[in-house]
Image (tube, rainbow, N blue to C red):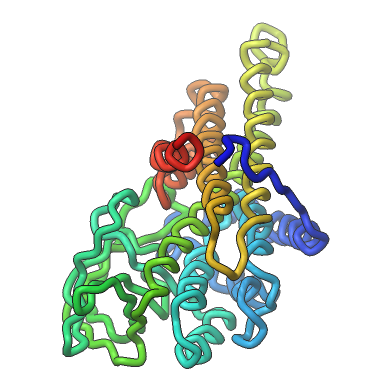
Length: 375
C-alpha cells in the first residue's frame, strides 16, 4: 500500500446544489441566536425545523428509492451535514442516517422494507453501540438470550430521548448481532440523560434489560460485523464533515472580531501574532474539507474498501484537530470575553471537544492509519 494511495476527489453537481441549498436553509433557519435558544431545551432542536428538513428529503437522502428515500447515496449527505455544522444546527439527522445505513447494510429484505421507509419519512432512529464510552473498545457485552430478552446497558446513545427506533449491537448465541428496539418497548426509567460539553447535542445511557425483541427484529449473520465496521467509518466521515463546517463558522467569528476590535489604537487583526494563526485555521479547514470530500468520493452502498477506510480515518483526524485548534484560538483571541459563556467562541470549543470523541479521536484514527499506510 502506497503512502500516497488513492487521491480521487470529485464534487458532483448534486453535491454542489445540495451544499448551496443546505447552507442557505441553515443560515436562514439556524442563526446563532436560535442555536442559543435551544441550548437549554429538552431535545436541543426545534421539532418544526426538523419537519422542514424532512420535507426537503434529507432524512432519506442516502436511502434507495425502493425504501422511500431519494436514492442519492451517502456521499450526498456530506454537504448537508457540513452546512449543519456551519450553522451549529443540532438535529437527529446524523443518528438517523447512520441507523438507516446499518439496517440497509445488514438487514434482510423484509426488515429493510418494514423499517427504512419510516426513517426516510422522518421518524428519528439511532445507534446504541457503546458500553464504556471508548470507541477503541468494540467488545459487546449486552446480550440477547434465546428467549429474545435483552440484558445490559448502552452508553452515550445519541438522540436517545427523541428516537423512535434503536439499532442495538448485541451478543446472541455467541455471535455478534443487532436488535431493533422501538422506543415504546423501553421502561419509563430506562434512560438517564448525559450532561454533554456540547449543549447542541443530546445523548443518554439506555438500560435495555428486560426488553423482549421479536425474532423478525433480530439481525444476525455474516453481514453484521462488516456493516458495523462500515457504519463506524461513515460516522467518522459525517462527524468530520460537521466539524469542518463548524471550523469555517469559527473562522468567520474570529475574522469578524479581528476586523472590529481595537487595542492601543490599532485593529488587533493587524498584528502578525493573530494573523498567522488565523491563516493556519483557513488552510487547515480547506485541508479538512478536501479530506472529507475525498472520503465522500470513495464511499457508497457497497462495503467500504481499504481506500475508503483510509479516507474516512484521515478526514476524521484532520477535521477534528482543526476544530480543536480553531476553537482554542477563538477563545484566546477574544481575551477575557472569550472565556465567558456569552461569547460564541464557547460554542465552537465545546463542539470541538464533543466532535473529537465521536467515532474515535485523532489518535485513535492515526494509530489505525499507521498500520494501513506504513505496514
